[in-house]
Every structure is written in structure tokens, then in C-alpha cells.
Length: 199
Image (cartoon, rainbow, N blue to C red):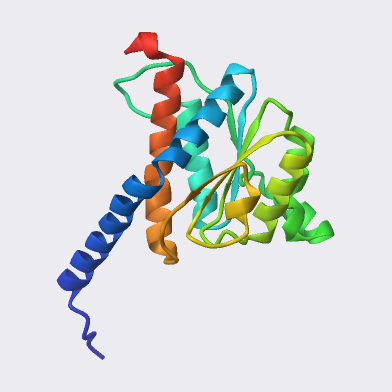
């Protein structure tokens, strides 16, 4: 059966809708982006690191953002590496713990073991309700670790995390696209503030 969808119209509509969400974020999320960058800066300046957790596409975002910090964001701004760890990459631990104890605690356990008060935890959840992200944030808060959440417009993480960057959408695709932009912005703000003399 031939599809009745016009691919050009569909692509055009998607790009415009995604751009509109980012435009709305430029009006509503700048303060929370600034606060998140400040928390990350404090962690690095105190000798801490960034821990990141998320599921699915958000897990990929965690690896992407950790790579930007440890490596660098752009070739035209060389600087030392910054310590960041995606808690989504150790398949042996993730499968062992999920099998023995349940998937909801896979990130919380790593925060307990690897986290320290100087660190900051970034939890990424498009719904804002992912149980394993919620538990990780709760454990981090109890340990005195700063918490940042990247979410959509709903979910309990909006109020649970110390700083929440909430994309004004409930559509997973658009939220993920916006999260990537935020992640790049945070990396740039942080590295330029830490290494301003390298400009």
C-alpha cells in the first residue's frame, strides 16, 4: 500500500514545530539553563564531576554530553578535559543489578558508590517520571549532591530536582531534540566560563 503522507510536508511541519518549541524555550528556560550551568561550574571548581543518567534516547544524550565535557565541544576552543561520567554505559553492571535487584535502582546505586558532595547529577527524562531517574535524583539529594533534571513539561522531576530545564512539550521527539540543544549550550557556557583566558 502506498503511503498517503506527503514527505516534504511532513518534514517541513516537523522542523517548524521543533523550531517553535526552541523559540518558546528561549522565552521560558533561560534562567533554568543559567542556573544549571552555574551548578556544573561549581562542581568542576570544587573538584567534582558530572554524573549523567537517562533511558533510551536520553541514555545516548548522557554519553554525548559526557563526551563533550571529557573531550571538547568544538575544535576551535581547545581546553583541558572535564570529568563527566555517563552512568548508562557499563552493560555488565546494568544487567547484573537489574537482574538481581531490579532496573529502578541501576542509577541510584551508581550515585551511591561513585558520587560525592562536590558532584552534580544530571537526570534526563522526557516524561519527567522515569522511576530509575527519580530514584537517582532522590539518592543524590540525600547525599548532598546537586541535581539537575532535563524533562518535558510534566512529571515529578520538575519539582524534585534542584534545577529543572523543562521543555514546553509532551512530544518525546521534540523534547529530545530540544534537550540536545540545551546540552550543547550547557557545555559551551561551562567551558567558556572555566577557560575564559583561552578565547
